[in-house]
Length: 291
Image 1 (tube, rainbow, N blue to C red):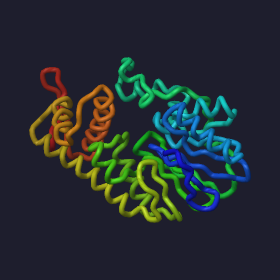
Image 2 (tube, rainbow, N blue to C red; image 1 turned 60 degrees about the horizontal axis):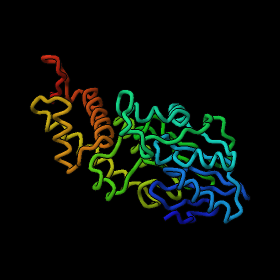
Image 3 (cartoon, rainbow, N blue to C red; image 1 turned 120 degrees about the vertical axis):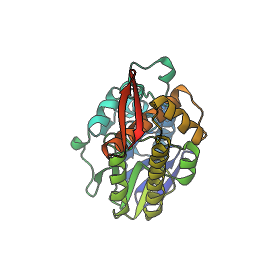
Image 4 (tube, rainbow, N blue to C red; image 1 turned 90 degrees about the vertical axis):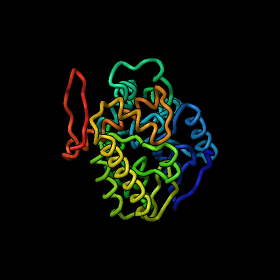
């Protein structure tokens, strides 16, 4: 774990729970995400020092804690700039927004841990980032608000959390999504995008995205159909959520409740906007039902 692996020419990644990308320009390094905590940041810094490299900047693909957790340590140690896009920048500057968003309220202490609540770091807009010639920032929304991918001059595209491996999908059952429709559009986009290599954060490197795109798209359709099947009889959100936890052999915890709960609500919004389910109120309770 945390081995430095070469992808092509000057493009590398650090093999860790959420892969960290590196592009080396002379002795300058452009980092793509920073890992899940201070310890991850320390391991990145050690790799930089061992190779005589200087951290030029960090590009955060999105603001989830496992991608920005090393920001603060690395920024304190090197003085590097950090860049992110739009809302992701705001969540990086004010990471309390993540647990507050997921829970839909002031977050209880149960949610204030490193997996949902990263340390704050000073972050600038990705539009202000001066990257070497040949870099490309690619919009990949859906998993998060304004997630981006980063394509290096070597033709390597880091696609962040836009796809997951089959084993990851099987392990978690229902993977986190913010905007289901945008996510499906991102999958379509990646299926037609040209790059020499694709580096997902939670899957193996591939030269072609077709298989991963199809697996992840099929899972979205599966979950959508499972929800519609359960809603043939009207249900409250809580009843539906409980049945989905049972269906996918999930264990309810505070963290899982907000992560999976938020995702299921996103599916409900998507299916309602598509005209496939409806909601109504009865006896001061909200119910959902397949049309």
